[in-house]
Length: 168
Image 1 (cartoon, rainbow, N blue to C red):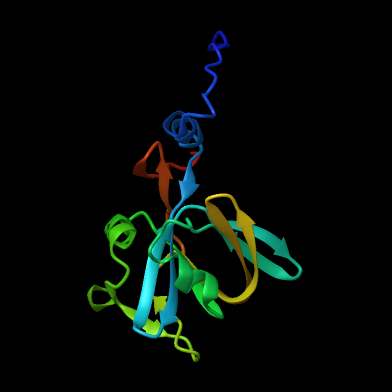
Image 2 (cartoon, rainbow, N blue to C red):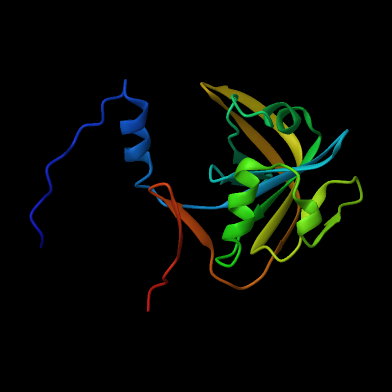
């Protein structure tokens, strides 16, 4: 057994130090989409989690400072797309640009919600609740439909995209 590593306390007043500590937790990568008055809109998020199976609820947390915050907290419906390990370009582009749909294979749900094709999983959601959470909001969606395919997920840790190597 390896000797214990010394505990390095993050200065909670130093956002960068806290962010580095939080970055040690690997997450999946998603793109959230919704329809707006000016067309389809997307944003990359790694703050996705399941909440409940009965009823089926999921959550994600957009930053209040984002220019895309209002459309995602004021919409009636949205889709969460879990990206596969071959979709890092999609994730990187939606970080800075909200409308790259002309570069994607996508369709629309009956209500117009944009649906990106080829993702590892997709959850079509109706807005269920929004909670204040400091510099973010917690958006809870009620899952109305879900699809998935086999494949490895795209992961994010330490400020970088990476690949998941399963147990063998």
